[in-house]
Image (tube, rainbow, N blue to C red; front, side):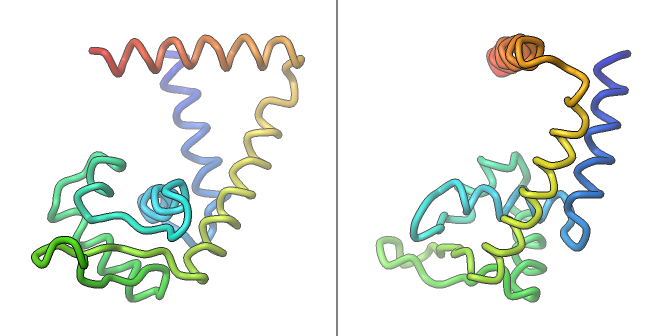
Length: 134
């Protein structure tokens, strides 16, 4: 289907744009980036943001911590919980990946007029909302 072909092309663009960062790593770092200063979330919030299980999230956080892209510390409001914080290195990595992704997206959409891009954005928003409801 057209959507499958577009999805494959976007996946390729994401991999190219992220260079040294896995797409799942980008998803976690981007969730922390979107959280705003202090760029910190609980592992549970990250699981909800990225739609993965606790075991998967633990593995991802372990790997990102090894790369020094995040730190983990005890949650002062919940003695049993922890907080994940984006480091300066993680911020640079996610910003660089996002910059590359936006450049790839601009390249992919350059054949569309401003009006066509606007219509596409509106249609995709409608489709995404419908999919979220179901």
